[in-house]
Every structure is written in structure tokens, then in C-alpha cells.
Length: 228
Image 1 (cartoon, rainbow, N blue to C red):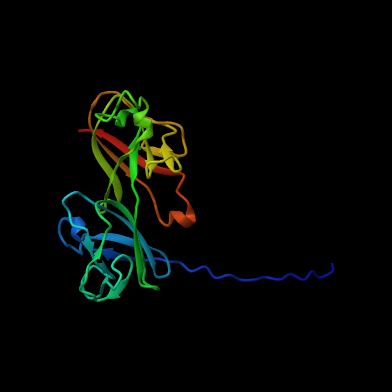
Image 2: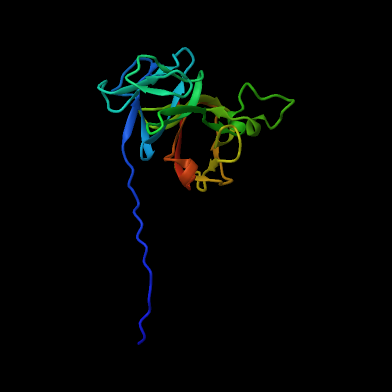
């Protein structure tokens, strides 16, 4: 047969892995051994999550290992600059939950308000008002990030009714179970878990959030609801 000429262009895909760590007052103690880990999402760029609870401090450092041999503190602009071995502390904007990005290539960091929350009639306890009969569907109750379990959690008094999970108090990214008898919860699914009896419940939501800005959010996550 006649020869066919083809052109092959090879591409190299770098495998990015690694972690850095974020000891700080949000832990209740400065403990680099248990500090929140920030995961590499590209070469030299790391991402993670933390919640600053009421009464906890907002300051932290960034360490390249679970020790103090090399760390980064604040520079002239505490809101975004990193300086190697600086004694000045980095700082969250305040209380609440944040997505943290650290770029060791440019020596910049950011802490953006970010929280998963429960939503639905079951979550609308004392805040339910006659003036807003759909309060439970209109307002999320934010969860806190458990940096050791790498999960989002809340213990709350729930009413009988439905409950789902959504991000940042809006419906752009939300999860509901296709099968409420399981712990698998599905992105953009209209289903919900049903709370049959009022009481205190612990809700735990675990999701792979590795670089959602690039990869999107996963089709499934896990959710457990346990009566206390």
C-alpha cells in the first residue's frame, strides 16, 4: 500500500504532589504536627481549607514540613505577601471558613470566604419566620471544616423535613442524594435526606476538593447524619 505520513507531537504531563502545612491559632493551639495540610494543585501552588471559630485567633504561619526548619510569615502587605522565615504572622480576614491558596512561586497567599452548609426545612430551626415561609430553602447554615478529618461538619438542632448540602449559601454548587438510604450524595441532584424526628444531629460532609476551579466539583461526595 502507499505510505501515509503522520505527525506525532509528544506532550509531557507533570504529576504534581506534595503538601505544606498551616499551624496557627485557629487550631486552639499552635501545633505543626496536626496543622491543616495544603495540597499541591500545580507546581509550587497549594490549596486547603480552615475554619476560624469564635474566640479563636486569626494568625498563622505556612511551613514546608511538619517542623519549624522552614516557614513563611507575613511581608509588608500582610493581606497577601509571604516572606521566608518572617516572624510576622499571616492572618485570616476574621472568623469563619476560608479556602486558602499559597503560591510559593510568587510568594503570595489568599484566604477567600468559603463554606459548605446545610439547607432545607430541617435546618430552619429558630430562624423560621412567618415572613419567610421558605426560610429553610433560602438560607444555608454554614458547616465548619475539620482540618484533621478533612471533612465539613456541623452539630445542629434539626426539625422534621428535608436537608441538602450547598456551597457558599447559593445553589450554584449543591448536592442531594440519588438514594437517601446511602451516604453517597450527588452533585446537582434534586433528592434530599429526610429528618423524621426533631433533635440534635451531627452532619458530616466529605468531598474531594482538589483544585475545583480547574477540575470542577466531583459527581459524588459522602454525607452522614447521626442523631446525638
